[in-house]
Length: 360
Ligand SMILES: *Cc1c(COP(=O)(O)O)cnc(C)c1O
Image 1 (spheres, rainbow, N blue to C red):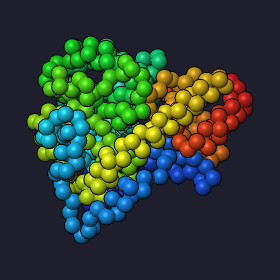
Image 2: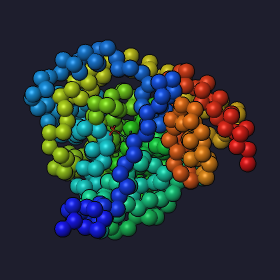
Image 3: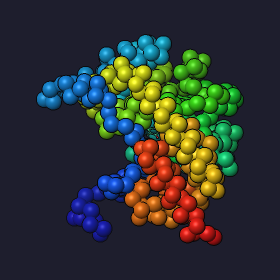
Image 4: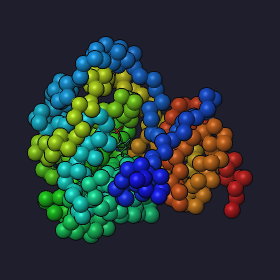
């Protein structure tokens, strides 16, 4: 019979205990949604056209994404087997954690970091081990290396770190890798790599050949503006990626997503222009928030981080009441995505008002 809490069947208790994911709310028509690090630009016409002409929807897409893998393999100077495509890099994160960490094993990441990380091991029973950021919101790589145990199977590094913004430096990365056992998977999640300008930031594609245990993750969702199509990719050792392919849900990758990604690679120059624009807006947003008295973390992504601590939720609620949706991390801070050009003065105005109305 049904359980006391109204469940008609038996759900695993650790699964039943999970609070359902709440996606960022939509902004009103005259407002701005700055809560999901989405790209504010409409898709390029050339990309839209290729997506619309992609396929008959009564047919499956090419599950192996051969054409796109060939193109990415050439771009990154690797073999076709060293590229893996899936319906979003979140899907690949899930696959890699499942391929490496069984019940009782550990996978590790910094915190706060990408909100999907804590869920990745839930279904397999792998334990999520978190290591706090430094006071300037960077990965504490020494503490992460110290936290490795004989149960650690995977370490997720997010550079630039979502939601705080700093990138891991090349020097920090190499020192960290010297301390990590060679048989532990290290995932370098570079979802925001295209927005990085700091010359000392780690660039996975430059170092991957030296580290067989490292897998790079990239996505078409952020800089390329295809979040709604769901497509991301990994570059790394073929056997490791075979593990990811083995744990993936079959046939999830659509032909439309592949067409959008291929068309985007053909439109790289136009997209680079948009990326430069977003980077300029990021600088403007950080500078102006700093001028009105906020401490803004260094950022190499398409978002800025205010370490507001206990005032994070109040700040986000105040913004939401005024039509601007930002993302609070209760007790830590607020992430504001770099959106439309017109959103910048609105954010500055509201941030100033919040400061004057909530003086502590
Ligand atoms: C947005 C994001 C992703 C993933 O995105 P997909 O849309 O699944 O490709 C992955 N990692 C980080 C850190 C992100 O912020």
